[in-house]
Length: 523
Length: 59
Image 1 (cartoon, rainbow over the protein chains, first blue to last red):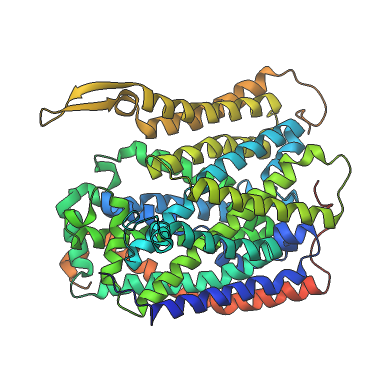
Image 2: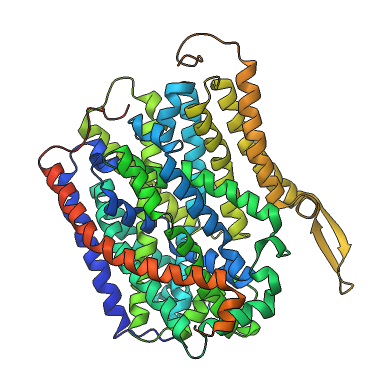
């Protein structure tokens, strides 16, 4: 039985949704150009940028897997957040890659690549970015819906008779709730583009932060939990590895090294993050948004991680079941009191809506700006450009409904996110660094980096599923083991992807004969 | 939260957790106030037709 109340908590959630919708739609009148729609006319200032970046990079899916990290790995599970913050701070202070990127005046990363590597690489990079991004985003809606149902204590799916209307609604509560949520987000994103996203992100950042801080303080100050019980639970279940990633049996130096590469690549090239840089009113503002938001990335992992550790400390194994992803929402459902539950739900809806709107707009911007570029032989009018941008965002929303919500994902969430992310991040980060700082980089090297950057993680996933052997488990039972997972593992494979993508860039670039022109060393 | 022995054993995580709560609370209030001014300024400039550069759409 959860503490969710229809009389107290539901009106809080309703009020938040209404305020967001009104704010998002009100700014649509300022959208007159494609540049207003995609990057808010480059008028974003520092504090709006901080709010927008933080809100975008924290969705329910983030909260779920970071809390799972806390449950499964203890405090050491927050290591990726520390690495991410360090990367963001260094990049924000030095301007590494982001300074030349913002100075170039482009709207997307592939647009910058065209200046150095030509239109084919721009198109190919656009396809890789959109594929990786959309597949990554495909799991957001369902995961968010699962969180909301578990916290509210709605019956598990399949409990009602689907033959009746009431039964259908009961069976598909998750799909219906998330469809309504997505439609709400889609309406203001389609109408107002980046302007609506920035204004609603600001509102969502405030609501989200109040909820996150309030619940965390409640856990730390609770006489039943508190710091002492959190530490004791981690010591009991994980030992020293729960505090130090280097001695954790599932982590080690390879986990830290892989996450350092992954987070640096995400800071440099994850299009939703970069879009805040590109929407900033100037390069210095963009860099300040990066450096001043950096510590939020520690909070992003540690705060939900503490919620996960609190679930570890308080829930019996039978209550958690087989899926540790659901431990945190089950804990919150019984821990958070009426009233604060409404604020928590509004906060989580805010987190999810800000992420969904930004992601839809971001991938839409790459489709319009880069993938459709070869089809625009002559410049399109602002009206036609806006029409196509809005249509693309609507189609992405439709894709999310079909793929991400009504088509249930099979398999492990973290592996799925990691693979789809690495396919994109490894090659794009190598291309960006080479584009900005290596004069010999050219289209051959760029093509090789993209191919190897995608081929290795895909090959790993395929081999993980195909190359299996029968073995005898510790209790004498027959078990099926993945050879590739037990011999190489996802972290060595991930590190190799970055190294080989970089090698592909170097070798490919050196093999191509030197000549003058846009791809030549003089460019 | 304030048992000194438990804090001393895992001081790094205690400090990081405390920093998260304090920093995040402070930044939320600060950004909530300054962000409103940023939105007003952004919409004012866009309303006056200053928004955007000479970049052509759909390059």
